[in-house]
Image 1: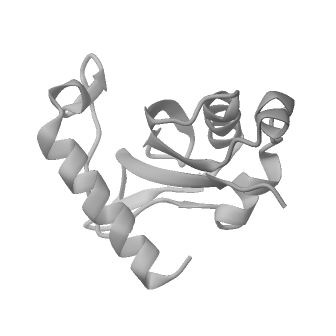
Image 2: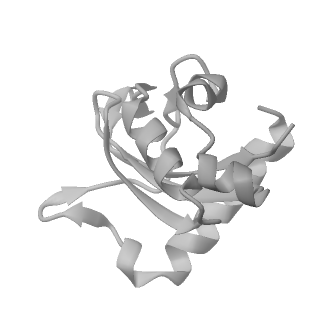
Length: 130
């Protein structure tokens, strides 16, 4: 992922986190997720690992549907995806395909002050017909 895309994802998440009360400090009662960590979680195998898990939905293919799906992923201190919420979708089954792929992916844990931490992070997945 290019540096510009990484910066975009961070800025996008900051705007989202500060403007939306429904994505506050916690998802589950008593479990807090950081908006930032010194080392942010990364999909093991990079974003390509997520793309490999996505099946372009037939409905979207037949409709010629393309675009970006934005999701908020909640990563626990072990690097497991606990939940995924669609922030902005494109429909046609692409939103569901993105959520399913991100949930199947394993991440490197986020770290702050040398400790593994729970982090919420935004991801964008591009759907483009060839």
